[in-house]
Amino acid sequence: MVNTEMPIPSEEEQQRSQLCKQMIADEIHRNNRPISFERYMQLCLYAEKIGYYESASEIFGSKGDFTTSPERSNFFAIAFAEHINKIKHQLGTFSIVEIGAGSGKFAADLIQAMNRNGCMPERYYIVEKSAALRQRQKLCLSGLQSECDIEWLEDLTTPIDCAVVIANEVLDALPVKLISIEDNNLLERCVTLDDSGDLQFVNIPADDSLSKAMLERLPKSVLGATGERYECDVNMLLDNFIEKIASFVNQGIFFYIDYGYARSEYYHEQRSMGTLICHYRHVANEQPLLWPGLQDISCNIDFTALAEASARCGLNINSYSTQAHFLLASNALEKVITHNQDAMTLEQQSEIKRLMMPAEMGERFQVVVLTKNIEFASNQFTSRDMLHRL
Ligand SMILES: C[S@@+](CC[C@H](N)C(=O)[O-])C[C@H]1O[C@@H](n2cnc3c(N)ncnc32)[C@H](O)[C@@H]1O
Image (tube, rainbow, N blue to C red; front, side, top):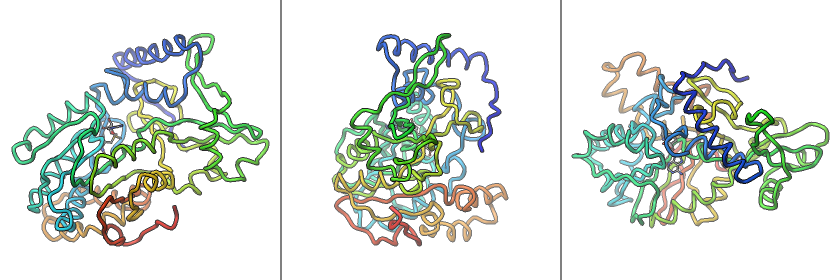
């Protein structure tokens, strides 16, 4: 069950949300038909100046809406630095490409940890869609630009010879389509306006490409069921996203970290409400039409779809594991304990535990490691590979 006791947004936030809602309503009026949920999510998260990631408001950490692993502890970046250190000889000269860098904290921690290891990248590319977050990241990293050549890109358009690509909690922020299956009918859940001008869901028959995608993904037990309504979600943008990044990297390794499931679990007949989730000031809820532009809206990852998309664009799938097994395989814990334990506060120690505990972020978050034109042992990045589950 998710907590639905939403804190009330400030006057200023409510006004911003109203602008976002108006923009959505204008588009529905202009088109004279409902918009897909994918488009709704796109506008809520990324509309210029008023979308969730485009506004200047606090999003990350205890004062924001949610806390990602790198926001929780610099141990996350330290573990990455250790993994990279172990493969640096195979990589030769390499650049880091961080996609969706949030507050910039991961980049700052990673650059410092790599510097301590004497293993610096030729360049650190940050590929960030949000103009507001690019500004914020520049501020956060201003003190490190003399140590590391950092370049910001809105989109990856520069071919890179050898790259270590890292994307933590980025795929979950890609807009998704919502589906409802009622009496064997595949319907797309779209967004429209009711008589009083409020946003509401409306279901329309799924088009051919959406129907095809769902027939490939849903089990027979769901497709053939009668009576009960089944709702789910699908990321139709994933293929392009993975393909585009891969196409600009001549040789390299890609780390995608996110929360989600293998397909059999993702589209399980008992998961009948889908996996979309919203966050506002650390309160999780399932009401994406509430306060457009103020809430984070995200969706779990179908890791089987990620593996399929990767294989389609010629990437090799090295491993799939829990975040806990990925972090442990870096051997960073031993290093941190040997050098720092006495200097660490109890809170810092407990944050590291939270990254790894199964009931916290250790199992819910998973890591897919992909490679292009370079090979690494499959047990290099995890002590427990779960590739067979995909
Ligand atoms: C949930 S936040 C995660 C931030 C950070 N990686 C972390 O772990 O704290 C998602 C980030 O991805 C960015 N983003 C979303 N879609 C993107 C895209 N297509 N290209 C680049 N960045 C994107 C957002 O603007 C934001 O910085």
